Image 1 (cartoon, helix red, strand yellow):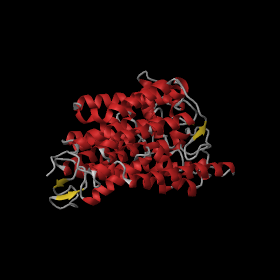
Image 2 (cartoon, rainbow, N blue to C red):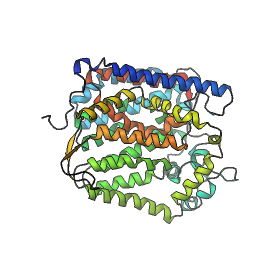
Image 3 (cartoon, one colour):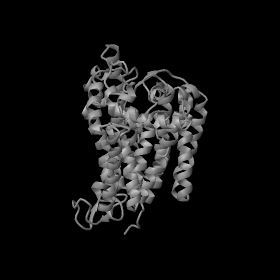
Image 4 (spheres, rainbow, N blue to C red):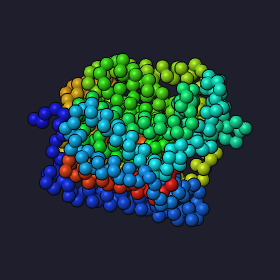
Length: 469
């Protein structure tokens, strides 16, 4: 019997796992998908098909370049690839999380500085389409919230900027709040996105550990540090959103109704950062189903926290459901009306590969094989669930299978909805970090190679393209 919290042998023998032919097949599929997305995107752009993305499937422009962030990024990547996996297996837990967060911050900042301090950070969030454009005009927060939905539709004299209109008011409130405490301007906003976004390297492993998968948490952490999506964490609001969602799920995983209530507050507020975060529900349900302790009490406490946030917003005059209805209309007033669904519905998945990295497909495959073989990295007996759906002592797939599955389900739902055509490389961030939990199933000897591939992906994107948040 395997000791609790330890990783099992892979379905394939450890000797041959590193050279598993299945990896080559999955990587080939990923390469074909990405190559087709780039080639077809170039053809459609040449024909004026209205992709509104010069470097489709990424919302960017082609522009090979380097900057003083280049050597810094190479140094961080070399250190994490060289010593990260081995040290993560043996380091003290608190030290590991602290160093992991600092390394994630360094990696994200280094990538941003490839474009320079001004273009990579300071001016990234100050363009007309961004939230900061609206901050000076918010002089009365209750009044702004009460009239928020009236300004969502485009072509009005006081219509919100694109990103502000496309999200609930919580996103704007974050940057208004920073401004009110003396942290206004593009630099402070960008650094807030980086610092909060980098916490996923702490909260995702902490969630796994709380769910009984300590070794998996250590294995996954270096992959979260060298996240290719860090290109968009620094700096975009979606990087900050990813940090908020991950923190809410981490709190929901811990024992105690008070902590679960705090998790519910964060996840409830996340619904007012992005309408798409209703799709976080599968992740939350997985966490609640697998968490130790009293699941019904945690569900109730978390729900009370989320409802409390909704009550506050309703009390001041913002109704989420009205806002969403008008956002759908606003969405089709802009580029979305031109962007062809037939291209983006599959090209969005190529963008996911650039956000999560080439390790995504092989890791998901290994997780699927582990689940099918009954050798889950973290299988554990579970009593009767809070929903009554699981009988006593039934062994269920653990978090390294179910969390990636829930994340991919959310991505699929968003993609098929037609409400996420293009610009998804940053939109996928809050889900990509949970999909990468599947890297716990990769054989340890191969981790350095996969991490190198992750780093090269981020470096290639950041040096070949001029990305836009």
